[in-house]
Image (cartoon, rainbow, N blue to C red):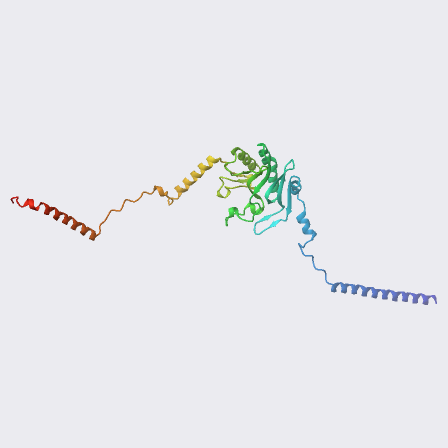
Length: 313
């Protein structure tokens, strides 16, 4: 009797195990099928507003920007990615340089530059330009700029190499503004030569390229500064600082050289005038002159004819 009860209990347990196994199998299968039927969400678009990945890439503060924030006012800008070879990272809009006495040297207009170039310009103004001008009893208050970032080739020549302006690695400076409203033109021959020589020396010690008067015709009205990296750290410093007399002599020398190289250009005053044209009488005028001469001879003969009648022949 006990053996029969034990066997029945074992059979019942086996049935329960089988039922639970079937239920578990059905649940697992249903979940798997349902998962296959539900589509996955679309991937998040790259570069959409508010995307943390792009925000972090553009707003990350570089060591250069951290240093620059202590000595200048600027705005962070997105990286430059074209067109063509016009590429630059860590770009800022340099608005003003802060002097040690906290006076602001405003750039007009603001310069779009790579942060290392903006930092070099800032140190040049703070450590060299402002003290040099202060030694004359004047106060620097502004910087007149021309080109900073400009996606173009060198000097605008179509087949030339990409300009450092196209990489936001160059700045063209025309003049410094003073507190009294006056301006110091870097290529102005009327500005004290000694002052401009000091500015030239300081610029050439900080920048790898300095082009001004004497470099070429493209830089007669401003000074070009850049940080182009060359092999062996080679630098170019071509800025002839001339006074008024030297500028006039150089202009005369260039004019003479241009005239010598182009024979077609002749001074009008050196051309002799042609000889006067000989007077040529027409046939009618010539015949008229002959008739007048014959008539004159006949008149003269008629006057002496009475006297000749008594003369023996």
